[in-house]
Image (cartoon, rainbow, N blue to C red):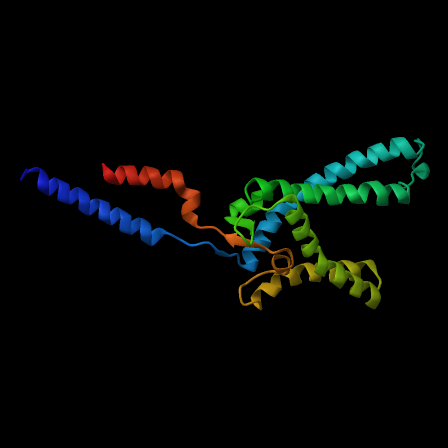
Length: 217
């Protein structure tokens, strides 16, 4: 008994230290900062552009075969009919965008870019978004770019002004975080959802288990 007591005491002391270390390492989820959100969007943007390019290429080929006569001379080249661009291509691009975010948000609340920066989008109850909530959030994120774009078209009307004003509306969504007391973006408030910065410990579960096993040996 006397020999095992020091070992038991040392083991208990080691366990207490490990528990204290784990407690000190625990981080709480917090509202994501605008800079981190934009960085995740930049990551996702490259994948989204690739998807839109693929969808556009496929629809252009289909539209050319169905609505236009093929020619062999460069002067015979024509644009796709306006009705095809508005009725087929534009809705397809919107569905691609909704499908991209909707699938990721419904499965785990994170897109690929969001996983890199440990971001997660949930509703105000802390649950993953439904398809309806995902669509509502995308519409909410598009509201300010649309308003700024309309203002730009009234002021100038040129393509450059329209694109610049639309981009400013997009940036406004995240600049708004700096003035909101909770750090929420425009789309967070309008869609009753929130993007969180998740604790680093949740992404290091495997390594934490390995370290704890080594420490307990």
